[in-house]
Image (cartoon, rainbow, N blue to C red; front, side, top):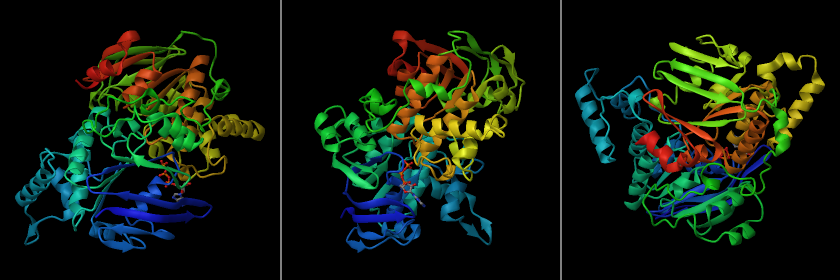
Length: 539
Ligand SMILES: Nc1ncnc2c1ncn2[C@@H]1O[C@H](COP(=O)(O)OP(=O)(O)OP(=O)(O)O)[C@@H](O)[C@H]1O
């Protein structure tokens, strides 16, 4: 029996998050749930997993028809497993200990039976074909291993027969090759009969995996069909607005894959859907055009001047990394987190202390750190990967978040502050269009727009972006990239760290590939293709 929701409605104060949603996931199906930030995807997932109870509608699970699922525990008892992007594994514990946090420790006479724990963990991992040593420290697992252990724990927690596996943006933070490994396993589970509902902003990863697609917009279903019925560009338009019927007609089946290929295949994405949507494809989105560069207050007209010089940089993982950046360049950085990609933004921005080498911004040497203020003052800003923990202050309104790094500039200058905020909200199409909205209550895409605007207003010579489109919908991506391009055309130098190869290839004139902590290769011109970047990053 499939899992089905009918007529689901859920309102929050001032927002109708779900408005009569119908959706069915049958045995062996992988149903992709797509939509722009704020379209209602998480609310639907939370309704299915017992976090929220709907105001109206019914939920069928197997042969039971329910008005609501009362709690996450009840969802587990009904056979609904959910995996979120944030893994519950604790870095300092072994895999067995992480599993014990959910299953409990086997004990006799108050003493933990460690052998039994490892043995039971090994059996659990084997059951889901996860090849990881139970004694390994969780913090030393690769991102894909971590995600697979998390998947095994989620599946194990379902006490009844598995009725539905819900994946909530699980691959958002995984590098592309590791996401593929993960999705191959999901494909295997689906082929063995498990119904899967997957939420993602990465359309490329659905090719060959998804069998059905539902697009939500403003809480309503605007498209529901077999995967491949419309192509990726049409899906993007359906997500962000425009006329759905026209969008569907304009783009018949073709590019989006027909579900017949290898699970997790990623060789079909269009530049539009996979990484850098164009203004046209984004349809209703309002990407910043030339005037978007007005947000960047840095020095203009420096065409090609060297703004960043990194020499023999070393940290804990990074070693002997050297490269330069010129005004107006957009340069990408690819590679595995453990190759130094996770550490390099921290070293450049002064968030972590370097152990060797030098960093110069506009000819000014930075101290070894940690000293982020010195980097900002010299003209280098970082948009970090973790928006809520290190990017913005969730409990403060948009206004404070925007002016925070440069509060002195707006001190007793209310009009300047108002003008800056108006430009931010207009140029970046921030929704809701209010400087008083709480930052933490905005969708991921809108949070990222605010953080980008905040740093552009400071006017750095170099802006380092660490995976800026994680969990960001195609419309917001278009806006963000369009604004970056406009600012780069005026002279901003951009260093773009991304887990999405397509993004590196389509946004950057040059890509640095990190391996073993050092810049192993620089790719540009004809050499800069998905295949070569992938080969250098992951082979
Ligand atoms: N607890 C809540 N209280 C008030 N409003 C909420 C709450 N949860 C969600 N909303 C609102 O409901 C709407 C749908 O939000 P939801 O989080 O479901 O969207 P989403 O499609 O998952 O977005 P994203 O891609 O950013 O995760 C949004 O307008 C959001 O602001």
